[in-house]
Amino acid sequence: MKKRLDFQPKEDICIGDKYRLKTFIHTGSFGSVWKAENLISGEMVALKIPINQEKADHTLSEGKHLIGVRHPNLITLNWMGRIEGLFVIEMELYEGSRLSDLMDNKGFKEPKTFDEIKDIAIQIIEGIEFIHSKKISHGDIKPNNILLRNNNLKLTDFGTSKFIDDVYVDTPYTLGTWAYIAPEVAGTHKRYLNSDIYSLGVLLYQLLTGRTPHQTSLQVINNYYYPSPKEINPSITEDMDKVILRCLERNPEERYLSVTELKKDFIKAWRSLNIRRFNETKIQEVPKEQDKAWIEKVQTLISGNHFTEADKILDQQLVQSHNPDAFFYKAISYYKQRSNTLALECLEKINMEEVESLRKDAFWEAIVNLKGKIYLKTKKYDMAISVFRSLVEKNPNSIDYSYKLASTLALMHHEKEAISILERINIDTPGILTVIKKIGYAYDQIRDFKKARSYYLHALTIDPDDKHLKKRLSIINT
Image (cartoon, rainbow, N blue to C red; front, side):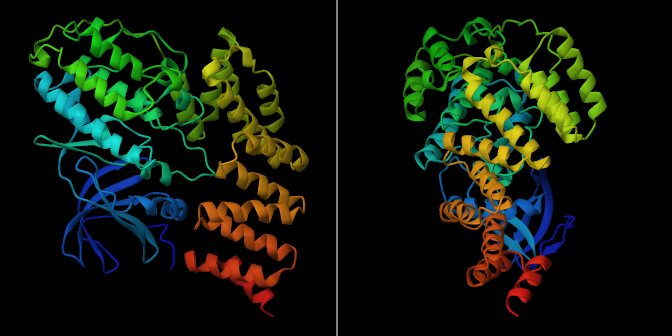
């Protein structure tokens, strides 16, 4: 099946004989969502069309277990796969308003009673409670991913945002999401199941005060002061204040460890709240932090290859202090510009003693991972192997680190060890095209053509138009 990398969605266009696009609904960093007609069932559905079609095979391999998961507060995923080469995700159509559209920086645009807010909060909590029972992390809880219709609420994008991100590519968070990200995730994408509980705490804080504790990555990472909910909204009781602040603990071990425990305390604390209209409470104005949000600016500039502008901001930060994050992003900028020696020099200047203890492990991993990439670029394969071994030892379940180690081992002609690692990945997470092809190449290298042929044929069922695979198959078949 040929991959469609040039598809431009528009009204009334058909995707194979299965879908007809009707109305554009929403767009994001992943791609677009359309109201569509399922031509087979006759039903109207929501159709997600990812921008990066190359990453879709990993989405399919990991996302299958989400299909058909049903809960009244979750959008149901009906199907995902390729049609005439185009990867799409079919979801339940739920024509509601996004929670983000109902709020501004002062709270709800239309007055809400505390009971109405409670109903919203409980539905969000119960949706997350359900997916956590399935050992699924939402990973992107924010008002933009919450749909409301009358008194009913559904969360969307659970799990799929994670699967759409390729495991081999670093993808920065979009602006606006930072306020809801747990501290352990903000710096280096280290995520736990109860990282979702931090995001829930941010939402509860916002629902009852009209604002979020932090607004930017810099505030999250550096633990800027924020007032307790009760300081902003005097109608909030001590019990509710404690519930929200426990959700917002920087250390994951000090947060609620389960959503069920959070729900129990939340309902208990709610009984002590005064029932009055939310917009009639006298919410205290909070002075705004003078925060230039330089990390977001730098990330955006680097991702857009605007290195000169990014370096100016980073140099200004380094004049003021030897900020570890500034050195790290300066190293990334140099790496992207192929100045690998300068990138390594920046990484060596990072003083880990200046990194908050909560972030040290994850920050160390990010540094070492970047070093590994630099060693690969500069063909220092022995050093790269050493780096990736250390990362795999620390994170044995990481597909990314294991894949990088296997790929580097293959470059040094340690094909058998590379095959062992790659086949383990393929058993744990089957269907990743890059992994299947790499196993085939490794068997090809050690002249085990029977097994190479088997993996090449498997890869061609996923991508039938891969010319290199076809060429290798024709060679080993002769």
